[in-house]
Amino acid sequence: SQKIEQNSEALNIQEGKTATLTCNYTNYSPAYLQWYRQDPGRGPVFLLLIRENEKEKRKERLKVTFDTTLKQSLFHITASQPADSATYLCALDRDDKIIFGKGTRLHILP
Amino acid sequence: EPEVTQTPSHQVTQMGQEVILRCVPISNHLYFYWYRQILGQKVEFLVSFYNNEISEKSEIFDDQFSVERPDGSNFTLKIRSTKLEDSAMYFCASNLDRLNEKLFFGSGTQLSVL
Image 1 (tube, each protein chain N blue to C red):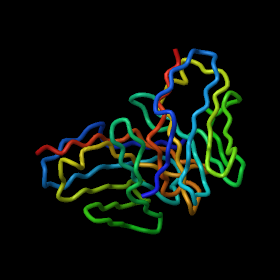
Image 2: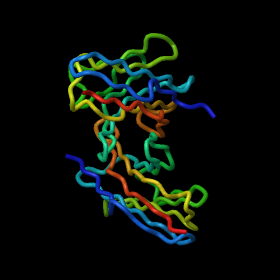
Image 3: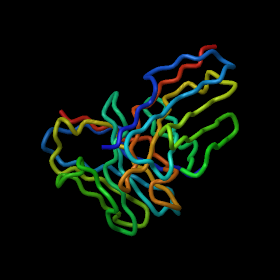
């Protein structure tokens, strides 16, 4: 069955540095991959979608890459701020449903 | 900015009781979803709904679950006879253009089954 693995449960990054989160998946390659942000007690918030024919996508301080050979997506936050602290979820489509990873809790340290 | 609204924010019920979780998706959206998240675990797909019928459902969405769009604005999830393991945060989501892309989530209903 399709599995999604996000690199670590928690990641601590110093303010101003670039945070890099990893999403690996097994088995078939999805047509697209999405990243969401989730704050405690709240629903996920859509950030970026990248399709299989796109190598990179950017939105303000966010950048996502998609390597279908490695079966991996990297999610970067440049010039990180304490307000970026949250859980970041990787999600991909499988059999007409979205599967979410467990997420990586990112802490930006002031 | 338009948002998905869910009520109630918290629901406590006794095992075996029926519950209805309510959602008002964003008004011009066409696709509707329910997800759930057990504390500390991943967000899990339950069901997707389009054009007044279920598009896809997961193994979790058994005969105890049903969804309905009773009018032009509400989207409900009913659990007929709740079990302890149904305790979770239930999220409604909607989107406009294509199934499963760029979902807008509500803030969730925390369901506690005692």
